[in-house]
Image (cartoon, rainbow, N blue to C red; front, side):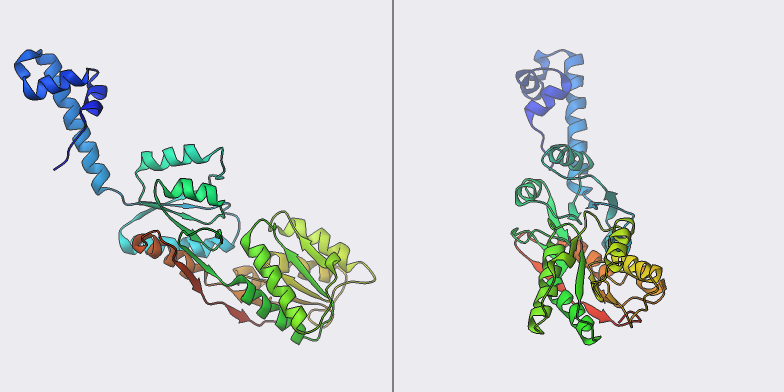
Length: 321
């Protein structure tokens, strides 16, 4: 049975709570017009509450950008899982921070969402605020300090495997093209890269540890070109994204350097660009579709206690090593 609060009814009918009480208990003491307004308010609020209780079928996927090829397959996975479970999906690009979080929560309440899948890494404070209002699952990028459920990969182990492939190609001057260091993936992939070099007793030149402000071909290309135009240049690049790997291939071509004879390159994510660029790019396959699918499943089943699901990665060897 759907119940409504007398104060809610009073506010909607523009009467006092005591008037609502008289309508319900001593109807003859109020005018017909007032009684009708209270009745209509009650019916309206009961209808809304029934809708609220039965129509939580919308999931929000919050993503930082849609131009990044990496997100395409993840979103396809969330879509497939949502369809299979009878949910609707809404893609949202709100930049979540301390200034925007209240408006975002109001937005969630207005839409009556079932839960949120985050493809962005949020601070512990923001995650705590958000999780008090709705179900939350972190996907791919996640806050390692948070107890909220997450679906991701072991970035460190995958980067170590990629770097070992570079070492096996016979190179000895290693560079890493990384993203912003305030992300989990950046720090963990750099850590795996350095572990592999240490294990093989290679010294690393920190001048070749490049952290970019964004995963961008246009940003990476001139930086790599400058590196390759020097007398002392790297001959092996570990790139934390296939997009950055493509920039290395293009820059090497500019200076007539042969791949993989002169330069070896490994990317990350196994996006379509790794297959169509020439030479084709050795990369780490991240199970993007499965990550998106699993995030929706975890959102449906999770009790919001810590539940981290790590999916397997795979080295895809192509022509750049």
